[in-house]
Length: 68
Image (tube, rainbow, N blue to C red):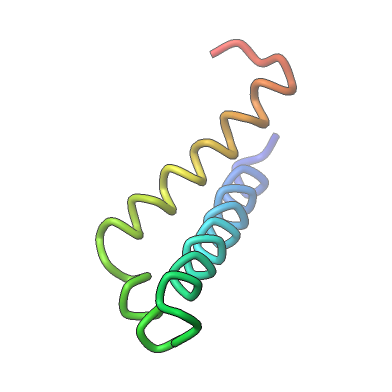
């Protein structure tokens, strides 16, 4: 695997993770997208994106049978 493949995979997973966090914020803010945007850029939303991204990468490694 090349470094560009790994970085692209991480970036793609991070974008999808942010979309999931933003969708949860939209639901929590009762479909007010501006309020959801403000809450999605806070530090704990960034932490949630990081955790979701790492969980996605970990799930991929477990399914492939990679030893860490």
